[in-house]
Structures are given as C-alpha cells and as structure tokens.
Image 1 (cartoon, rainbow, N blue to C red):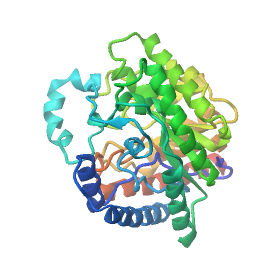
Image 2: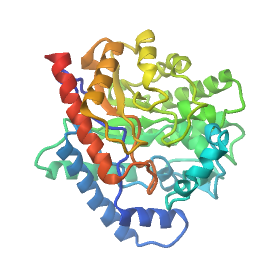
Image 3: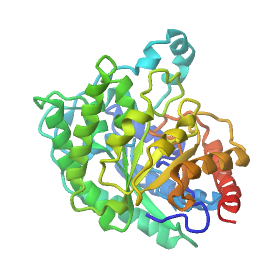
Length: 387
C-alpha cells in the first residue's frame, strides 16, 4: 500500500451510492424476482464508470469501483459459492433492542426498499468456491474503466468480505460448529482474495464482525467468548491470505454502519492486540463517529506494527452533516499523533456509504460532498504535518 510520503492521501471504506435503477434491480433479484441480467450488467458498468469519475473529481487518491457490481458488501458470495439458500434470521443489534423508543423513531427508515442484510441467505450445504471467474471479471472491469479515464487513482483497491461476517450474517444450518463454517468460508474466499491482488489491486477485507458481533451474535456471552471468535476468524483469514503479500491487504473493522445508539459497542482497547495478529499491512478504523472518535488515544497506547498503515475514518458515514475541512484536518492530525508518523496515516471514512443496495443514511449527493471535504481537510492537515 502507498504511504503518505509528502501529503495525506485520501481513500474511503468501499461502498458508494448506487443509482436508483441499479438499486431497484438488485432489490428485486434479492427477493427472488425475475430481472433482466443484461440490463443489470449494463447499469452496473455504467455506474462503475460514474463512480470512478466522481471519486477522481472530488480528489480521492486511493479509490475503487464503489461496489457498483455487487448488491452488498458480502451477500454477493451467494453467486460465487455453493451451499447458500433459504433465509437467515439475523439477531437484532443489542443497542437497537435496548432502546425501543429509538426503534419506533427509526421504523420508517428501517423499512426502506433495500437489499435486506438481516435476512440474507444461509448455509444449507457445503460452502465451496465456484472459481475466481466472477472476481476476475470484476477486477478487469474496473481496470478497463481506469485505463480509459483521463487520469487514474494513485492506487486502487477492491473489497472482499471476511469469513466471519459471512458466517455470522449468512447463518449456519450445515456445519457442526461456527468455527468449521468460518473455516469453510475462508477456504472459499481464498480464491477471491488471491484474484484481487493478482490483478494489481490492494485487497480490503471488510470485517465488521470483528467488532459488531460483540453486540449481535455474542451479545449474551462473555467478552472472552467474543475475543475467541475474533481469533478464530483471524486464524481462518490468515490461512486464506497465505499466498497474498501482507502489504497488499488492508483490514476494515467497524461496529456496524447504521445510525443508532451504539451504547453496547465493544471498546477498541481489548480488540487491538487481537487485530494486530492479522496478516495485513493496514487497518481501516472508525475515528469520526461520536461513539469512537476518542479512540485515537487507544492507538497511541497500543501502537500498530511499524510497517502498518492506518486508514483513519475522519468522515462519519451515518450523518448528513458535511464535516468542515478544519474538523477533518483536526481528526487527521490526532490520528497522526497517535500513530507517531503522518506518513503511515491515510484519511478515509468510518465505513461505506451504501453497504447494501438501497441502504445508506447519507444522501448520494452529500456522500460525494463529504468526500470533497475529506480532500480539503487532508490538504489542510498536509500543510501542517509536512510543511
């Protein structure tokens, strides 16, 4: 991964708003309705070109395809692996269940027309990869868009889910244990991970499970049980990355990309020693939202490995407030002070803006305005940090 050698580089956490026509097709397909596959492919390709152009226009240095070719950040695996069918019944995040008054307020938003990640398909048979063809095609499509653009990113990345989020959100009705299910998913994801890097892209592994499952699947269990799960996922992930250079991988960890109380989130401090076991070269962390903005202090007390980058989330993806560039700059400077070297810090977002088709708290036009502010704030911080 690139370092911020003489200025703070900007990036984001992966998903960007999709056009309504594309969202409608993804939602219909997720509900088992017939759609025109050729029209879906055409709209996804058009949306990818637009997404790349808009990222470049607002000043993103390290960008991607905005996940336009996927219905969500993880349920696309059902089309690339065997063993999935039916419908999961994902437990509600504990912080939402704890505050029924909030649920009443949020009900209209929760009922919006989107791909429902709380009712994803589940594992009903052996999970095995169908090959890397779909992933390679996705990579090649982005490469073609970048080659045709007047200018490109300084570096490009493509996301893939962690085995843990797949195993938790796409529930298990086949394997004897969760650990065996995680291992099977990791083995199937290995081809996807290797394919992304083989095409010259940085791999971002999306692993909200490594924080969010504390207040979801493990809400009623001791912290040690959850941390044991984290180790299980990381062991399986590391095995899947055996042939991938660590410096070509960044790990995205978050507490759930939804506007809610987050009063039951696990603190970052007990997590970090476990996360540092990952065979990666960087960590994408939420550092902007009101529940975790203070945890730059945790990084200072528990510094990351010397060769790691930290992609600091300095833009909140769950509010339509557009951060002032000075606020962005201050957040970047705090992250740089915590890490101890501004060259190891990139400026990013807390999470994606559209983790599933139709699901996102920020208006599409404002998502890109927030990214524009990200660039402006990074420029301010660069002057102060690099001179």
